[in-house]
Length: 120
Image (tube, rainbow, N blue to C red; front, side, top):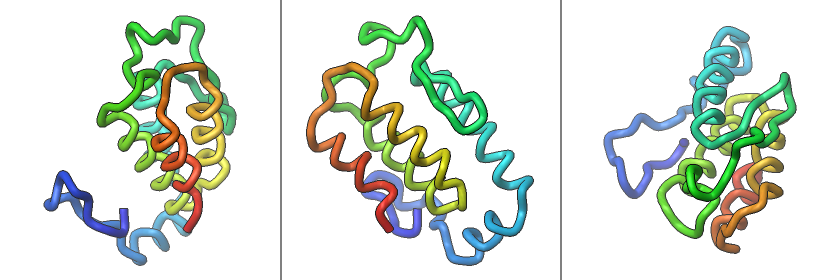
């Protein structure tokens, strides 16, 4: 992210030069999509090109992000925002839509963060 996080002050910042690199280099965007696919599997979701859908076995017992609270909600916000800032707005919107519309017990605060993640 372009600003320091509250929990890891050592994480590198997303500087303008890096954003430009993502705009100019498809291989960077491909690598980001591969990383996204790993995280989507963790969340019980899957990507087909620019569409993200829940897997058939998605459930609250095994996928804790469907429950209120937890650090995964902040992680989801950062993923959406990263995709948006790194020139993959369609994927950011697809992930945002998937997590907002998937049935779970998610707080309004988390939903608000997810909605705001594409507003820059």
